[in-house]
Amino acid sequence: MRIENDSMGEMKVPDGALYGASTQRAVLNFPISGKKMPLGFIKGLGLIKWACATANEELGKLPREKAKILKVAAEEIANGKHIHQFPVDVFQTGSGTSSNTNANEVIANRASQITDKPIGSKDPLHPNDDVNMGQSSNDIIPSTLHLSVAITIKENLVPALKHLAITLQKKSEAFHDIVKIGRTHLMDATPLTLGQEFSGYAAQLNKSVKRAEKSLDLLSELAIGGTAVGTGINCHPDFPRKVCKILSEKTKINFCEASNHFEAQGARDDCVEVAGILNTIAVSLTKVASDIRLLSSGPRSGLGEIVLPATQPGSSIMPGKINPVMSEMLIQVCTYAQGLCNTISMCGRDGHFELNVTIPLIAYALHESIHCLSNGARTFADQCVSGIEANIERCQELVDRSLMLVTALNPYIGYDKAAEVAKVALSENKTLREIVLERGLLDKETLDKALNPMKMTNLGERV
Image 1 (tube, rainbow, N blue to C red):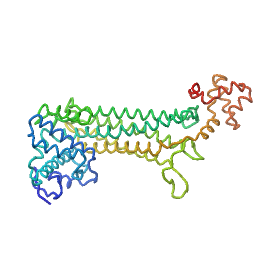
Image 2 (image 1 turned 180 degrees about the vertical axis):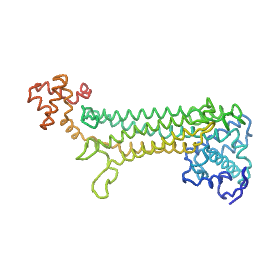
Image 3 (image 1 turned 90 degrees about the horizontal axis):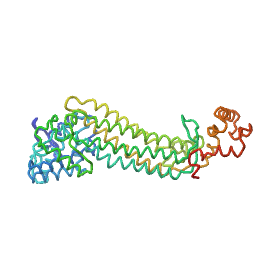
Image 4 (image 1 turned 90 degrees about the vertical axis):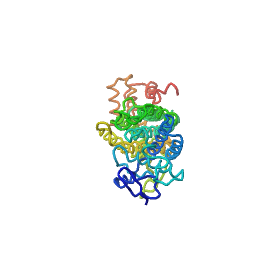
């Protein structure tokens, strides 16, 4: 152990640690969950510190040599290095001050290490005066929240959703001409094609992509420059604009200074809205996964209209059993994500006066839900959707047996007679065709035209 000092006095810190006294206090004070702040958030914190150092250098506030070494250390964090030097639990001070201080200390001590100065000497960089120049935890942590979540949505969630959308669209095209029975209320309805059904799933994912992209706009305002309570005390007036410009150029995401710093620090409504978007995406993914699971049910006693790729044995006692495990995986992911999104909504209520005090938990919940949804969507596309095959014979069998083809008879014999035909066919276990011909309601040629399933899908003219 070595001895370091902070504003509260001396503190023993592990020799190998780049963090300092304040971080060690947080480690001892918050031994709660064992869950650390997300990697994406820590990388975002490093990126923010890099941008702040660049801005302070351009403004003449930070000497060039100090800025140079500060940026080197901050960029290392932004690139994912030193992640083990961020040991503070998610359940910490609600402003995330411990995480901001953690970053300040790691950067300062890393600078000492690079320049062959003693760790803990605050030479050549002081964690507060230099690394935290023009900043407060109360604007840095909300800014890091927006920045890091926007980056992971852009780099992880959007590509994963696009990948699943494309995979579903390819299946829609492959299944273009396969007629099957539709279902409403889980009951037989009029026909459609398997391609049309899958086009609906692809459309859901395309809308999910647009929703995810919309969230980037919601996160575009950064609280940087508000410092302690939103007034910008100890901050150069051009500092926030410069930081936002630097981050925009670096990430290719359009960030800007918050239009109202008191809202930007006191409320987390933008994050709550993003959680709502993630919740909607989870709902869409659940719908797709559930339908695919049901369509594949059987293989002999269920619907069995599609065949899923066999990924692993489905039972420890029933040989040869294959289960829709990828659908089940994705449904669980979505349930988990929706719970996290509900947590974010509740956290959003805890903005009292000039600061929301649940930011670390919001950061954890957003990053965790995005991480799981991204991995879940991509895995579902690769391990399930891409290998789906149509059971054409089963689709045709169920179409032939369906009573809801009777809907097409309405223009010929009227609703009441058509309803009677359906009832008799069901009670006598006969086909619609048999009943119509037995009763002489239509001649064979007209009946063939009326009961053409492909025509009922609105694809008949193109086939």
